[in-house]
Image (cartoon, rainbow, N blue to C red; front, side, top):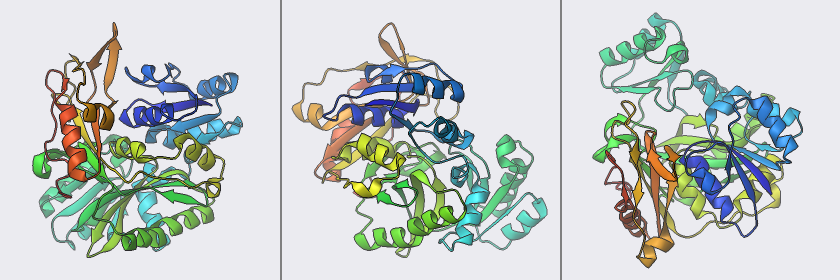
Length: 421
């Protein structure tokens, strides 16, 4: 099968790697890809979605998989479908579940899906008034896409009001902050759950836990994610069933009623409070680095799942997962997440240890290639993934692999999966 993958990060590399490892010959294309995806397929330099759809038609691409949120919010799926192409991802209208936090919160309220108490407004007076009814910490969110950084957890009323003012003025997030949500802070533990949807049916993947903060012990600023592990022992079958019944089913039914059936990945950020799942947010694509650990846990063909989801036929297949655990550790560049870093050559030691060769791998993200050498040029450079029969075994293997990767200024957390251990 000829498959096109949109995106340039570790998520897209991982999807490509998993498809490449199937027992079937696939030809892969990436747009734009990164410095390592050309080891899996062909990188394309086509930035216009209409031209990309033309390329897909001319080259008989049988399936397109969209990785990041921006092309989905821009409507790439609608453009491809208009040309009769098979593409995995939500329509522009359905992608509003991530593209607008205001749309998402109002949708949750409309369909009685559990979420935190909130107000959404562009009136500083109304936002301040609601803020005064809450006790700190207080959550302040910009409405639009902010690359995973548009959420402020304010530790005082003054800090919350400062965040609101800076968002509304456009100072902190430009147009993305022209409408603001203020909501109550939920105290519990956070989970990432992913449902692959075809509009009516869905497949729920093993629950993962992400580590958002830069430093060990969940200190420091929020990032796009410094590591993750799955499945998490913090979820039992009862909690999975509550998520199915109270969040996923009403969301798919609600989106049908809204005239925007949801196809693609529904990423549910959940806070579990006293055993009850509360929806923090929706995203409309795989999380990164969660995708990097979920892909190697799938034992049935990934391409088949994406193809069946994109053609509204998920009910025809059984998706199987390994009994193993996966832990992914992000290696980031020197100045991440504060600014860009000087490009640094990446040296990867040759693997001589049998278990490391068999149970670990690297998913590349912020890398470019020059003269057949890889350079760290992005914020999150790569993810070292370890698999094992226990979380500890998987984690230890992931860190052994980290020890074999070298570049100037590399930084990583040393406590990924600590909540479970």
